Image (cartoon, rainbow over the protein chains, first blue to last red):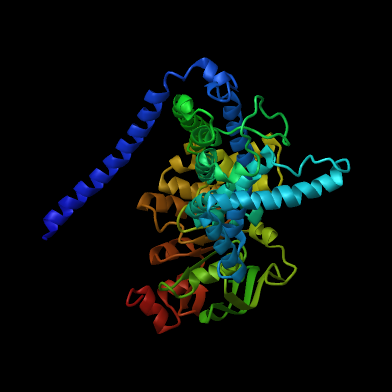
Length: 299
Length: 253
């Protein structure tokens, strides 16, 4: 085949591939919307499920999902950022310890999410939680050693930390070394340089990491199966030791565990649509913050 | 060369891994004069410059032996505070590197990290520093604009103002005008002339005319050796060594 045709066919192939992505997204969203639109009412958003979850709303699941993602972000964004800063700014890139950390991060990113769920159950609930009960709770009382929104968020944070680390590290790398040298040459310490020069120039990358983590965390169900998601709760969590409902898990429950699957079909579509909207909304907040920071830097 | 000495370097050797970059360099640099370092690329002049404020420390697997005495204190002693050293020995880089902050914040950066908080003192330092670097008149109404919005020559003068704000005694310049147009270069050179009344300046340059114009003394480096070091006037009219003359006349390098 001569080069001219090869060049043309690559253009066509890449265009078709792009179109396929757009088409499948449009199809998915419209399918969810069209099949669920009859259920998308104000009551649906603000009420708890009723009649054995074949009617009513999904309010507890919305709140549970949002709280889960917020708690998860509070844990994974700072921890991931600090790790990325250590890896990129402080560690000796050739040392065995650094290589081990990198290997661990990459491995963590490749672990199936259900394994995180089991890890959360074993580590957070049975080990940390039970340990806390031994110390803080009345004898025989179980307060922390059971599934709750805190442990679910922490488990989810473990799942999303590699995403944050990779994203933050990429931006740290993109901060020119001349800026670091300029700061150090003025007598700034390494930490001052990181705090005043490197981090302010990396805010958008840190928030990109947060956006990606939110997207992942809002959609995953497996890590919270054993660590805090509830089948049905008519109320929303008020403290860290409460269980919670979750949109993704709710869809799963309705599709597989319901007494009347046919009756829940529309609710499932509508719930999926709301899950998508929630994820978009949370990402949108982060995007707005990132936009503000970018504007502030490029005065 | 009879003025008081500011920097005294004795038998300095410098290695990048196994590669030797400076070979037994000894030099005495006088106070409040401009000393130019010339030589072909890779001759060690920039490496030498960076040994004077220990910027080479940032590169891993480098080694140094010998002494660098500034005001009779060896800056490679164990108990030397590098932060203090770098406040005393400022540096201007080849590529201007203003921080992506406002002009004001760029100049105030050094004083601020030293813990200075009083707004009126900071204002004063910013103004004085920008005046010293001959940038004040051009930017006094735009202090809140980004440092990156300035032209290349202005950015380099902003970097000089930023270095002056921490009140150094020595200023190292690593080809400060090599990326600038002739007019901006002239401004930087005028500035160097102005600054040498109060500061000891060491400048690395590839531009022979620039060395001849701005410096009092010139040191010629070749392959890590300090070949010749004398007054600029003598260097450019009647150098001691044939090698020096060949380089200055542009026969090699």
